[in-house]
Length: 201
Image (cartoon, rainbow, N blue to C red):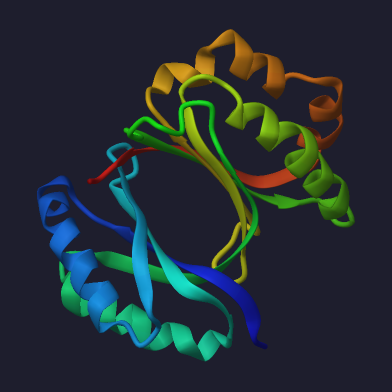
């Protein structure tokens, strides 16, 4: 079924020695993609030996899942060192510049989760009216964005571009994380993944 798509997410296992080649590989991926796109963010996790690449479509589109197989094959060609490649359609549901929007992001923090049955509407309201605007306003946050992953879940992907990892432990950040509404909705997160990535210029 066609899904509203703003970005393409490529997730792949990648070892440290292959990271320096990512910039050129992703440039070729965007140039050769059948879908016009530009690179939004490249990020790599040393702990997971995993890369996340976000290709921003030049125009929001309705895409069928069949569009993903050629993109998977293309990424494998331009980045042959990548393993376990997964390509997903992302729909942007929240996007806000952060308090430190004029600074260069050094880290990319991602929270992925599936909601308990029936809880997505309440979680979405919490995310989009309290949680993400609050975290975006914290010093050290460059941008806060939440997307729906239509293919390789978890369903909800919230990401934060950060100047430093210390932002996560700062009093303003913790004040937003631990609110009464947060205490209500967070127990209804399942399959939760929290990953700190380093951004790749």
